[in-house]
Image (cartoon, rainbow, N blue to C red; front, side, top):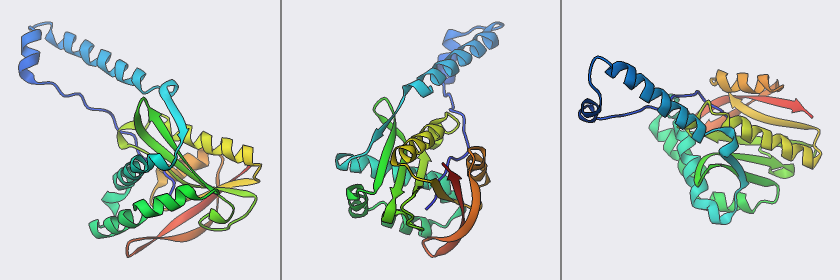
Length: 221
Protein backbone atom coordinates (compact mmCIF):
# COMPACT_ATOMS: atom_id res chain seq x y z
CA UNK A 1 0.00 0.00 0.00
CA UNK A 2 1.31 3.39 -0.81
CA UNK A 3 -0.25 6.75 -0.08
CA UNK A 4 1.25 9.66 -1.83
CA UNK A 5 1.01 13.31 -2.81
CA UNK A 6 3.98 13.77 -5.15
CA UNK A 7 6.01 16.66 -6.37
CA UNK A 8 4.25 19.67 -7.96
CA UNK A 9 4.88 20.66 -11.57
CA UNK A 10 3.90 23.81 -13.44
CA UNK A 11 1.71 23.68 -16.52
CA UNK A 12 3.47 24.60 -19.78
CA UNK A 13 2.12 27.08 -22.30
CA UNK A 14 2.85 26.40 -25.97
CA UNK A 15 2.39 28.92 -28.82
CA UNK A 16 3.45 28.84 -32.46
CA UNK A 17 6.08 31.44 -33.24
CA UNK A 18 4.33 32.48 -36.46
CA UNK A 19 1.14 33.36 -34.59
CA UNK A 20 3.04 35.49 -32.09
CA UNK A 21 4.78 37.46 -34.82
CA UNK A 22 1.42 38.27 -36.34
CA UNK A 23 0.11 39.83 -33.13
CA UNK A 24 3.14 41.50 -31.53
CA UNK A 25 5.53 44.12 -32.84
CA UNK A 26 8.77 45.32 -31.29
CA UNK A 27 9.71 47.16 -29.13
CA UNK A 28 6.65 46.52 -26.95
CA UNK A 29 6.37 42.81 -27.77
CA UNK A 30 8.15 41.52 -24.66
CA UNK A 31 5.93 43.50 -22.32
CA UNK A 32 2.80 42.36 -24.14
CA UNK A 33 3.93 38.72 -24.07
CA UNK A 34 4.67 38.84 -20.34
CA UNK A 35 1.21 40.27 -19.75
CA UNK A 36 -0.40 37.60 -21.90
CA UNK A 37 1.37 34.76 -20.08
CA UNK A 38 0.49 36.24 -16.67
CA UNK A 39 -3.17 36.45 -17.62
CA UNK A 40 -3.21 32.89 -18.95
CA UNK A 41 -1.53 31.59 -15.78
CA UNK A 42 -4.07 33.38 -13.59
CA UNK A 43 -6.93 31.92 -15.62
CA UNK A 44 -5.48 28.42 -15.29
CA UNK A 45 -5.17 28.83 -11.53
CA UNK A 46 -8.78 29.93 -11.22
CA UNK A 47 -9.97 26.90 -13.17
CA UNK A 48 -8.41 24.46 -10.70
CA UNK A 49 -9.10 26.29 -7.46
CA UNK A 50 -10.24 24.26 -4.46
CA UNK A 51 -13.80 25.55 -4.88
CA UNK A 52 -14.14 23.79 -8.23
CA UNK A 53 -12.88 20.34 -7.13
CA UNK A 54 -15.60 17.96 -5.97
CA UNK A 55 -15.05 14.73 -4.01
CA UNK A 56 -17.56 12.01 -4.93
CA UNK A 57 -18.01 8.32 -4.05
CA UNK A 58 -16.94 5.83 -6.72
CA UNK A 59 -19.41 3.11 -7.77
CA UNK A 60 -19.30 0.06 -10.04
CA UNK A 61 -20.34 2.11 -13.07
CA UNK A 62 -17.15 4.18 -12.64
CA UNK A 63 -14.81 1.19 -12.88
CA UNK A 64 -13.21 2.22 -16.20
CA UNK A 65 -12.38 5.68 -14.86
CA UNK A 66 -11.04 4.17 -11.64
CA UNK A 67 -8.84 1.79 -13.59
CA UNK A 68 -7.49 4.62 -15.74
CA UNK A 69 -6.76 7.07 -12.91
CA UNK A 70 -5.25 4.28 -10.79
CA UNK A 71 -2.85 3.12 -13.48
CA UNK A 72 -1.88 6.59 -14.67
CA UNK A 73 -1.16 8.11 -11.26
CA UNK A 74 0.79 5.10 -10.01
CA UNK A 75 2.88 5.07 -13.18
CA UNK A 76 3.53 8.80 -12.97
CA UNK A 77 4.63 8.46 -9.36
CA UNK A 78 6.80 5.36 -9.42
CA UNK A 79 7.95 4.57 -12.99
CA UNK A 80 11.21 6.47 -12.68
CA UNK A 81 12.34 4.41 -9.68
CA UNK A 82 11.28 0.96 -10.84
CA UNK A 83 11.84 -1.37 -13.78
CA UNK A 84 9.37 -1.53 -16.65
CA UNK A 85 8.75 -5.22 -15.97
CA UNK A 86 7.95 -4.71 -12.28
CA UNK A 87 5.69 -1.77 -13.05
CA UNK A 88 3.76 -3.70 -15.69
CA UNK A 89 3.23 -6.68 -13.40
CA UNK A 90 1.99 -4.49 -10.55
CA UNK A 91 -0.32 -2.37 -12.74
CA UNK A 92 -1.81 -5.42 -14.46
CA UNK A 93 -2.52 -7.16 -11.18
CA UNK A 94 -3.55 -4.28 -8.94
CA UNK A 95 -5.79 -2.51 -11.43
CA UNK A 96 -7.38 -5.44 -13.24
CA UNK A 97 -11.12 -5.16 -13.83
CA UNK A 98 -11.80 -8.22 -11.67
CA UNK A 99 -9.79 -6.92 -8.70
CA UNK A 100 -11.40 -3.48 -8.83
CA UNK A 101 -14.89 -5.00 -9.03
CA UNK A 102 -14.14 -7.03 -5.91
CA UNK A 103 -12.78 -4.00 -4.03
CA UNK A 104 -15.76 -1.84 -5.03
CA UNK A 105 -18.11 -4.55 -3.73
CA UNK A 106 -16.35 -4.65 -0.35
CA UNK A 107 -18.51 -2.92 2.27
CA UNK A 108 -15.37 -2.08 4.29
CA UNK A 109 -13.57 -0.30 1.44
CA UNK A 110 -14.50 3.02 -0.12
CA UNK A 111 -13.16 4.85 -3.17
CA UNK A 112 -13.59 8.57 -3.91
CA UNK A 113 -12.81 10.63 -7.00
CA UNK A 114 -11.55 14.20 -7.02
CA UNK A 115 -13.47 15.73 -9.93
CA UNK A 116 -12.62 18.92 -11.78
CA UNK A 117 -15.70 19.38 -13.90
CA UNK A 118 -16.12 16.01 -15.61
CA UNK A 119 -12.44 15.08 -15.32
CA UNK A 120 -11.08 12.73 -12.64
CA UNK A 121 -7.88 14.36 -11.35
CA UNK A 122 -7.22 12.18 -8.31
CA UNK A 123 -8.66 9.48 -6.08
CA UNK A 124 -8.75 8.14 -2.53
CA UNK A 125 -9.16 4.63 -1.14
CA UNK A 126 -9.83 3.89 2.54
CA UNK A 127 -10.28 0.56 4.34
CA UNK A 128 -11.92 -0.49 7.58
CA UNK A 129 -12.06 -3.66 9.66
CA UNK A 130 -10.85 -6.84 7.98
CA UNK A 131 -10.33 -5.05 4.66
CA UNK A 132 -7.28 -3.20 5.96
CA UNK A 133 -4.09 -4.46 4.35
CA UNK A 134 -2.53 -4.96 7.79
CA UNK A 135 -3.50 -4.73 11.44
CA UNK A 136 -7.27 -5.20 10.83
CA UNK A 137 -7.99 -3.18 13.95
CA UNK A 138 -11.72 -2.52 14.30
CA UNK A 139 -10.93 0.89 15.78
CA UNK A 140 -8.73 2.02 12.90
CA UNK A 141 -9.10 3.35 9.36
CA UNK A 142 -6.43 2.78 6.70
CA UNK A 143 -5.70 5.32 4.00
CA UNK A 144 -4.50 2.87 1.35
CA UNK A 145 -4.23 5.30 -1.55
CA UNK A 146 -4.21 9.02 -2.25
CA UNK A 147 -3.09 9.81 -5.79
CA UNK A 148 -3.35 12.92 -7.94
CA UNK A 149 -2.53 13.43 -11.62
CA UNK A 150 0.93 14.91 -12.00
CA UNK A 151 -0.30 18.06 -13.73
CA UNK A 152 -2.45 18.87 -10.68
CA UNK A 153 0.23 18.44 -8.03
CA UNK A 154 0.58 21.45 -5.77
CA UNK A 155 -3.08 22.42 -6.27
CA UNK A 156 -4.24 21.09 -2.87
CA UNK A 157 -6.14 18.18 -4.45
CA UNK A 158 -4.24 15.68 -2.30
CA UNK A 159 -5.06 17.73 0.81
CA UNK A 160 -8.73 17.72 -0.14
CA UNK A 161 -8.76 13.93 -0.47
CA UNK A 162 -6.86 13.59 2.80
CA UNK A 163 -9.46 15.74 4.56
CA UNK A 164 -12.18 13.50 3.13
CA UNK A 165 -10.44 10.49 4.70
CA UNK A 166 -10.41 12.23 8.09
CA UNK A 167 -14.09 13.09 7.70
CA UNK A 168 -14.86 9.39 7.13
CA UNK A 169 -12.71 8.42 10.13
CA UNK A 170 -14.68 10.83 12.33
CA UNK A 171 -18.00 9.48 11.02
CA UNK A 172 -16.90 5.91 11.76
CA UNK A 173 -15.69 6.86 15.24
CA UNK A 174 -12.28 5.16 14.90
CA UNK A 175 -9.44 5.76 17.34
CA UNK A 176 -6.70 6.30 14.76
CA UNK A 177 -5.88 6.54 11.05
CA UNK A 178 -2.86 4.80 9.56
CA UNK A 179 -1.07 4.35 6.23
CA UNK A 180 2.16 3.22 4.59
CA UNK A 181 4.56 5.44 2.63
CA UNK A 182 7.55 4.30 0.56
CA UNK A 183 10.74 5.12 2.46
CA UNK A 184 12.18 6.73 -0.69
CA UNK A 185 9.36 9.25 -0.90
CA UNK A 186 10.44 11.94 1.59
CA UNK A 187 7.98 14.50 0.26
CA UNK A 188 5.00 12.26 1.05
CA UNK A 189 6.44 11.43 4.47
CA UNK A 190 6.82 15.12 5.20
CA UNK A 191 3.24 15.77 4.03
CA UNK A 192 1.85 13.32 6.58
CA UNK A 193 4.15 14.49 9.34
CA UNK A 194 2.92 18.02 8.69
CA UNK A 195 -0.62 16.71 9.19
CA UNK A 196 0.22 15.13 12.54
CA UNK A 197 1.16 11.55 11.61
CA UNK A 198 3.98 9.76 13.44
CA UNK A 199 6.05 6.76 12.37
CA UNK A 200 5.34 3.55 14.28
CA UNK A 201 6.61 0.62 12.20
CA UNK A 202 7.84 -0.59 8.81
CA UNK A 203 6.67 -3.28 6.42
CA UNK A 204 7.56 -4.79 3.05
CA UNK A 205 5.67 -3.72 -0.07
CA UNK A 206 6.25 -5.95 -3.09
CA UNK A 207 6.26 -4.30 -6.50
CA UNK A 208 6.69 -7.04 -9.07
CA UNK A 209 9.80 -8.91 -7.99
CA UNK A 210 11.16 -5.98 -5.99
CA UNK A 211 10.66 -5.88 -2.22
CA UNK A 212 10.49 -2.30 -0.95
CA UNK A 213 10.18 -0.86 2.54
CA UNK A 214 7.20 1.25 3.52
CA UNK A 215 7.17 3.41 6.63
CA UNK A 216 3.95 2.93 8.58
CA UNK A 217 2.50 6.12 10.07
CA UNK A 218 -0.56 6.84 12.17
CA UNK A 219 -2.63 9.72 13.45
CA UNK A 220 -4.49 9.55 16.75
CA UNK A 221 -8.03 10.88 16.42
